[in-house]
Amino acid sequence: MHLQGNVAIVTGGSRGIGRAIAERLASDGAYVVVNYAGNRGKAEETVQAIVQAGGKAVAIQADVSGVREVERLFSETAEKLGRVDILINNAGIMETQPIGEVKEADFDKHFAINVKGTYFACQQAAKHMKPGGRIVNLSTSVVGGMFPGYSVYAATKGAVEQITRQLAKELGPKGITINAIAPGPVATELFTAGKTEEQIEALSRLNAFQRLGRPEDIAGAVAMLVHRQSQWITGQTVRANGGYV
Ligand SMILES: NC(=O)c1ccc[n+]([C@@H]2O[C@H](COP(=O)([O-])OP(=O)(O)OC[C@H]3O[C@@H](n4cnc5c(N)ncnc54)[C@H](OP(=O)(O)O)[C@@H]3O)[C@@H](O)[C@H]2O)c1
View 1 (cartoon, rainbow, N blue to C red):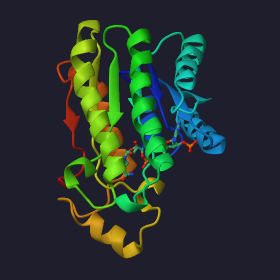
View 2: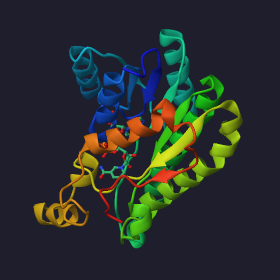
View 3: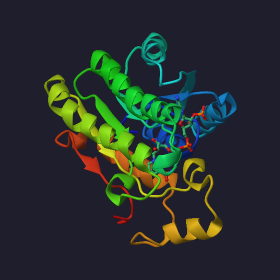
């Protein structure tokens, strides 16, 4: 319970990796804000699971692709819970397409959620956090994989990694660390959508442990980076991918 007294915002905390991170931070003692875009039922389910396990959580809707929404997410959190200590920029989308099929709207949507959402949440964190604050941004190991069809998604996460590096030296003087976690394939809707069983099986065998990553694997890496003993780690990207690349 070493995070007792801390307030953590997990964007996209309603399902997938975000849900596992929300549950993990709550079990470590944090009061967790489970952010979601539209799926209220899933967000409430996550809050219930946390409360039933003895933790504290509240769901707050906000579409992170809008700057005003991000500002509201932080002001509502501050109003309800009085502080923000941890921000996990987890909300993200991934649609793969060959370059010839990518439309302007697809490009803009990916950058609005994955990059703009992350950037302006960091801006709010800089405003609200006190020394000891922790930010973790979700990237992807696809950045190192150069797979066909992933150009837009990988570009957004390349930007997320650079934002992480840039802000480390800007937030360091405030006593805030900022790092990125780059998972490999993890068993969530984002990864399995549109793939055959064979494709999933083949991708699951490319890491050292020859199984698909679990949301809990990523939550463990996030828990490490938000721990107070990680105060000297900032501006880094940790590839939490079972040795995938
Ligand atoms: N799964 C993988 O293999 C994998 C690998 C590498 C990196 N990642 C990264 O890990 C993160 C989580 O992925 P996941 O697989 O857990 O995805 P997921 O299962 O599709 O869940 C996405 C979450 O993000 C939320 N979300 C989507 N758009 C949003 C918006 N505009 N504003 C606020 N919340 C929004 C969703 O909320 P609603 O429920 O309301 O829609 C949901 O909670 C992403 O950044 C992804 O790029 C995933």
